Length: 218
Image (cartoon, rainbow, N blue to C red; front, side):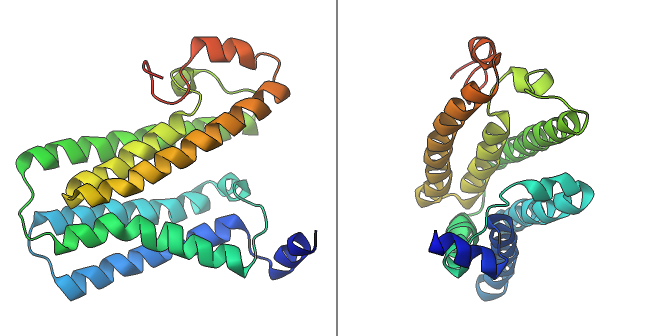
């Protein structure tokens, strides 16, 4: 109880910590570009993809103020440091690996990474905007349109996006980031299933007609 009170006194929320961490990621990517230089299209593509994603994360909250209501639980300075280490630094690992990779990116890797990023971003953003709009008009359980394919379609889009970063990086170590995010999302979605089942009477029916995470698969 005392820790919660202290966290509230700091005025920091989880969203604030994530926002600062996203800004840190942008700074790190530019540091990588100055320290290691631009050797190939690999670095250019990576900087554009990951940098634009972080910028969009921040811009989206200005375009859609309702987004500021997510991750609004209070965190202390410990939570801020954890966010900087995890979201800011660890998530930048593929970027570091991309900038120290001397091998030119192949046409195949580019052809795989770009659609992953584009469709991942479109899926994630479409899901968020649909849910925000539906909630704004008083909807309860959002289960139509893009949400009919997966109960966590926004997570699926986010995973595709982080997978694209790993492909561009061209290192097996880069896949640690999407792997960790996948494990985190799996834990979160099982918790979400329990709370949603208790909140919505028609959630059981929605479960039968949709997949848990990956459309048409699982």
